[in-house]
Length: 309
Image (tube, rainbow, N blue to C red; front, top):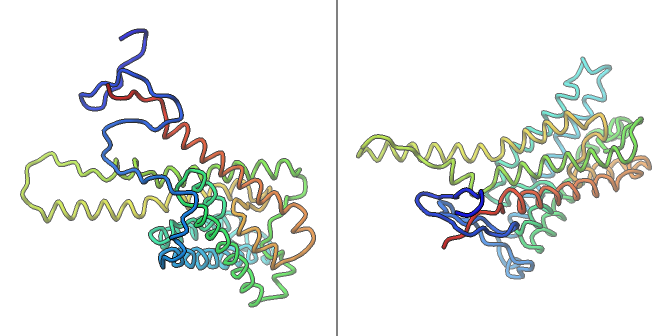
């Protein structure tokens, strides 16, 4: 071997030639990588699964706004933070609802519940433009309806308590708010990519057997238990990422990182100051999602491995 390059082995196989950066790593895969989604897929429009996925995104975002906006209003209504769940409670409400809703809808629509997540996955060719646009529209409609139901239940408190609308807090610049939204969304979308990576699922689904056994029942129980654990493990880090980002950025922007959530609250609240900085809650999350998609696709999943001779 020339130079100081080390051999890269997969089992007993050697890879003498390096592969250009930005292309998929070549190895003996024990998992199935889904093919890139086409840019346009008109056939989806005639499929019930397509419309069902959009309905799932609508309902999930509706429930997300309903629970989280009510939580925010409950904190603001209290005479002081000690008399309410406080910022930590708000963060748990957002993170916990994302965990629950991703768990419920992941097998139907992928459990995006966020236009920024949908945009990032679209850039990574995980879904078509047709589906991405449909998801974003349904997410925004669900968010508007969720905030609207909260206002319908208690119209006067909704207006006086701010309606859960996102704004840049006094003492922070627009640049600070934009930066907080970019980094916060990067954390979320990067976690989504990592938690749903096919390679991670394949690695974690192995059942190590170090003893001889003919007991198929025991083996099947182990496999089913691991599969159930994987269904839990994907939504859990995503919800936890949302929780942590809220703890960090609630004092700055109230934490958007979800354009549909920000739009729904702003439309129903409909005060001038809610629209002054509204662009931040679209531009920031979309930039953060794009950076996370590029980082995961070009760096994490496309490193210079060696190709077969």
